[in-house]
Image 1 (cartoon, rainbow, N blue to C red):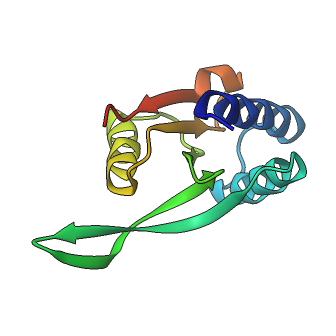
Image 2: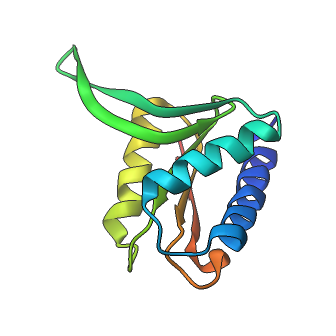
Length: 125
């Protein structure tokens, strides 16, 4: 499965979750439900994946945690905030670079229309 197919499935799942639950819940709730919905679609999902930082040849496991990684190809960062700031997209781009992935989705569930809460971030390796 290629990145575009995966991101399409993730967007469809986000739409379904948002339509069913609406905005205003904790990120952890959306993470659990997205995990459930994506697995129901027979996609491989990993939650809270540690992304180590390599600094001067040393691997530091205290790096970052990606909310979801789907099919080992797409990082999904979930938010439930009033405003997505540029730093949130930079954070996802950093995750993509450190994990050597090409595509990520930043999904903010705290919006009226879920299409306004989805941003695609690309790492131009």
